[in-house]
Image (tube, rainbow, N blue to C red):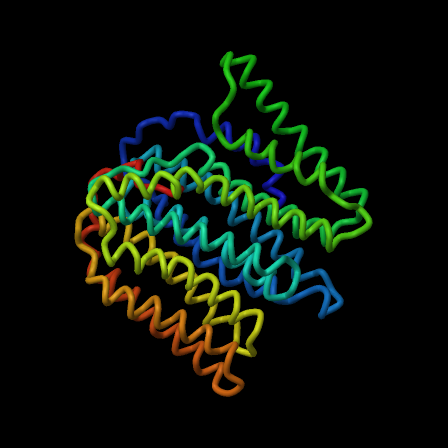
Length: 381
């Protein structure tokens, strides 16, 4: 998570052209992404060792180290993908890893009462909604191009994690010093880019500057709780603003392309119900967090696969999607409404989601294991 202060510099490195490779690498971009995904459950577990209840901040410092390493691997697999060529599987896994990384930090922090539950819920509703819209576009042969703001919001979400965690761990003076440094570094990077390129950099450096400057402006030094609330709602606002052009443009575009199908409506309904049912289950039931987090992770994975299969018109029938998503959502909502069997209901929801997603991945294996060049337009938004 300390990598948040280095990201403005590393972001410039991300745009350096890679030298063409002449041989197959020992370590591929997909290997690095897979290792990143495998480390995320450990990160969530460390966050659940809450300093407020344990009386020690050691686990959150460990989480900071793990989160920093995980964040830095994003640059490694990006470099390898550019050097040796992107693959369809890698193009699907990379944005998926980013989303699961965000989910397995924000949701546990919300569960512990550290951040506002509805802000987190709305944040993930936006993510699922844009994914569902992308599938509708792909099915019709339309392109939903990723906007600059859409890329920046992912950086703000990730760097916001660092600010939230370090705000709870560091002394006021040290933390504010970090905010100042985090604001100055992007300014220097932008200035250097202007001097060398005679233009403003349209990469994530500007997003870093916006995020750190906003936290610095609205941070309330003597009230951590208020500062955290302002921060998470600011992140939620940026997340939704980054999706407005997708959401507002989708209605006329889809109407022009033949109107809405039942599959579109089911996807949109699921995009709202899955994250909100997870929030309700975590905050208002006694069920374990493990099955709930696995439902979110599996449905995020299913969304990326659904985008790809929609492009090839190879998705399953909408009834199968509805049974999985609406069924899992209903079970998670029931965990908060019923006093008994809440644990069983959560695990059944997880089993329903994981089994359905596993079948989709098996069905779509010929598409995501395709060795052809990855289309850069099918990326995170």
